[in-house]
Image (cartoon, rainbow, N blue to C red; front, top):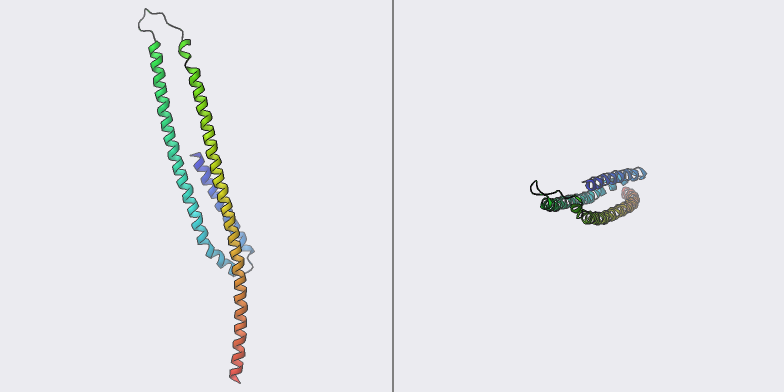
Length: 188
């Protein structure tokens, strides 16, 4: 659950960062035509962010289910171990008042191997979750890289659009000039 919360917080942070950078791009655009390009790119970017969010949510749900399954299996295995230890302890308990009580030391003997097994299991889990965290960090890094590439591509498209708009405006001016010339010729 903590991982899911961290991932959701990171998604929120990346969205805010992206929106700020979009605002910076809009402010730095020299003409109102740049705003139209940003508006055109917003649906694509929104769709990409929505897709990333659904991927994160599906990963989070999957991890939550895996964690619940793992938790249930560990509880079940520990319950079985406790029941087994209870059986060992009961087998060694004196039955009746005539017997002399034995010291608890012989029954403590199985605990060190169990302790070692639990410590080994704990180390394995730390390694497993360390690898999982590493894989999530790789995913986050890859997604950040994709976001950066999308930003660069969006900026490139914005520049291309502005260049095309400038060419269009120059052509419109030239067409208007030719029209005036033609109208002048027709009026003579």
